Image (cartoon, rainbow, N blue to C red; front, side, top):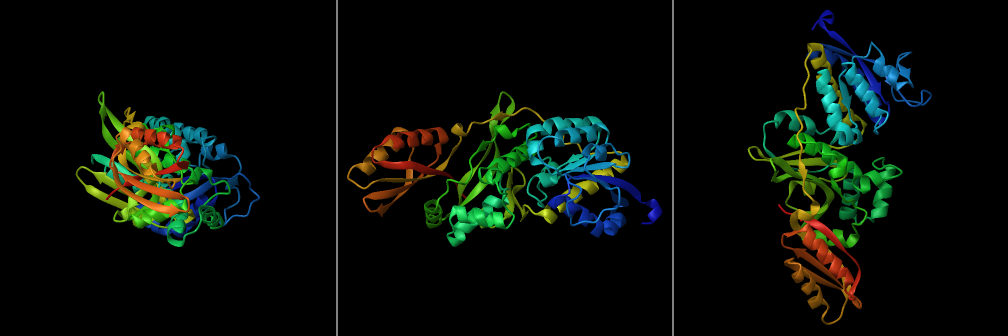
Length: 435
């Protein structure tokens, strides 16, 4: 394609950290390829950073770098805005401003979309420009595009996946090397997988934001992060890891969004994040270290799995660049890809969901204890599928796998078990995901 027939697109980048600098690097590396294939001359016009004096991995022309993010959005030479600063404010204000000016936006901001996505999607549709966010979930995995486009007419039943590389790395180290939780976390921090404050990752907040975005796109309904049931991995211990392996399972932190029915004409969705014992035969069980994978089940398509790097500068920047090319091309043609209307959904309480459960508890090793424990299960209608006992001196460890039961009944069972004089400490609980 001749130089004269190419269309120049000015790109404004908000944030130049790991992903932002990797994006700028990819734009330089792939400039000619992109131009030849798409006819787009993507040019970094302005870049907003918190500190202009910090050393960076990329070289920018004079006048490109600024600490005024609003100036980037308002610059007439900026046609498309890429938001990579994270958090809710000022990102929400900046993205809204760009959309109102008719400028497409590409973002990787999961926290923003999980809390204000519906508002921003509507603003994009009103302005008739793109708001694209592939990098918000799964790093370099093309999940959002698959759900928005390839599976847009598919009656999706369930999306279940490993969407946080930090927790998957920690659990992999505990499973494969017998590493303690705290040592595995320290390793993840030293490798750059976990922040100094790892709460967002290990307590499931990051995965919950991603689960809300997945549910919104997969089911066409507004699902906020606060509606997602959430548990982290900090309570998973070596005994749980060992028993999972012995019983043919692997423990993973899962984000699950599924359609469970309808209430008053509205879809009823169950959206949750928690550690689970996954059957060793399930494809997700083999996803290790910091990799991510998402397993999709649909009425027509059957089962699909997307797998790849869930984090890191270049994989995530690759997803951003794909969105940027789409947004720039659509803007140049005067078109956009709307997310579609988002309806209301009923969020099913975790208490009403059914699954099998793993329960691990320590008790005094004396006559009548097992009968008393079994009696508590029976009173709440929780049927035991299997049981193992392990001696611990004058105590014993009891490990149960239940048949399918409601969360409400199992939690009531645990409450009564804690009241038994023979039970030592709080029983551990994990949901069990079969084949």
